[in-house]
Amino acid sequence: MGKTKILENWTFTRSLPAPFDAEVLKRGKKDSTEEGCLSVHNKMTRGRRSTLNSVTLRGMLLAADIINGERKGALGVETEKGQICRYYAEIVDSSGAGDEIRIFLYDPKKGSWRASVKKEKTMSPYPRIGENGASGKELFLLLAYASVILGPVYDGEFEGSFQTFVKEKAKGFPDMDLAMECAFLCCDNLYRRLENRDTLKEMGIPFHNDEIASGNVPLVPMSRFKKGSYKPTREDFGAFQVLKVKGEIETLGTVGELKSRYNRNFSLTENEKQQVPSLPDHYQVPAEVSEIVEAVLHTPMRVFMSAGESGTGKTTNAKMVAQLLGMPYYFFTCGEGTDETDLVSTMIPNIGRKEARPAVELPTFEDMIMDPASALACVCGSYEEEISQEEAFQRVLSAMYQIGFQNGQGEKDYVMVESSIVTACRRPSVIEIQEPSVITKPGTLVKLNGLLDDGAAITPYKRGGGEKEPGDGDSSHHQHGL
Image (cartoon, rainbow, N blue to C red; front, side):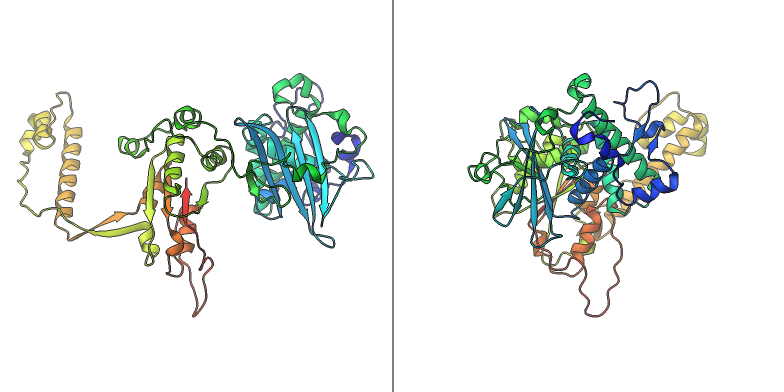
């Protein structure tokens, strides 16, 4: 088995976590030779297979719980000049008397680790890793997280499979075949990138094996935390309790420098192109904007919340996100009386003049038979010499329908217009929802949540007398959805 300390033989013989233990028992084996379960980094020529590793799998489950918000903890990074120099993790264990917080740091350049356990005011070493000791699953937690965000340890294959794994975990693993495929692939991916790190070079995971060969992970003393030697500059998931995020984070650059890097290059209509913001290229990109853009590119997150007083730059930041991603920007302003109907449409007065419109001269049947091109030009204004009778007839009918519809619209006192939220949900866009905290009508925020989730739809909610709907009383300032 593995040469790396955290991949020794005993890590494969330990019992698997639920529900994978039951699935392996049902299948009668914990390895697979199926192509969809094998990593591209698996270069074995004979006996090519992937094997579930208990410690790797437990670390992945722990990471999924923190990402899904099902367990207290935090994941983040520290950057220098826009480059990740350290990864951080905090895991809160509430099983004993009082919370125990396990803190892990990983330096990808050196492949080195630091770990500490904080209980009340005491900082102690992480338990020795070994067959009769700690599993070291938190190290795999951090490696899984590092593999899915843009940086020195990022791996596209792992990201795709692990994101599916996280989503399936949130649903309780309803599809065990899919869960097992993701588990096999992720375990094989991390195993190959650790074991073959020298031959894989930049695709391998840097790991200073000698540093923890005895099973002891070097301690980070409390004094180093107090001096600020280790401080994450970004929280991607959860909230740090022991580690403190730096108040000021270096910007990654200007709008002009970063828009080519982050642009998604979607095919936009002419109208959508006009909705893409055009902030000056010399504007510095704030940390919160770069965090949102990085999250959009490398995580499933699509809804973000900004809070602050008027004039602090919330709307400018939303426009900057849209410009960097190359997406149209829309906004929707909430009020006290905003209800679920307002979220999808509104009725506005028809201010168009109701003047008599000139009658359109229609071609005769003989015109259509003898000269379809002239008949089409009579209605549409374009002469197409080679057009057939059938196509000309269809286009004349379509043109007349549109003319009739527009004339009918002009006769209405009010016209229904879809909201900017619906417009943004139809196509890749950035929508800023301003001041949702002022909404007072019950149920509106629930429907807003429905529009901003993956379904992008409003569903009816039945409420009894005096019941409070989920989400009533929620408050926020600005939300950005993509």
